[in-house]
Image (cartoon, rainbow, N blue to C red):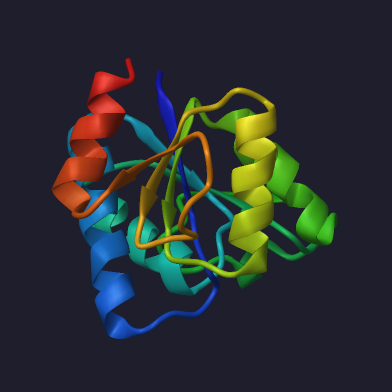
Length: 148
């Protein structure tokens, strides 16, 4: 089964949260599994959307306590790896959708591109060669479908 990673900051404003939630709904409706870092912000928004649409969500957590996962993670994976868990998120995903984000997201984008994973960018770091930039959640989901 296809697994789509959603990467983005652990805290965000309501507009970005809703964008992530909309992407999560679409991922669930595609019948794919959502993979993320399992915490708040963009990760929670995406998980919430997928969860509420009946989808599966995998949270690859930085710490050692599964109770730190957001409430919409259906499969929490504890790593105790901190930011190094970003590699596991990328490796577990067939493609990634980057929504907004800070330096952690930037590192995930870099790892994904280095490993040859498709990256779809939605309101994220600009002007990075290799990212397929889109303007809406619908465009991100269409790009994900088109990438196989």
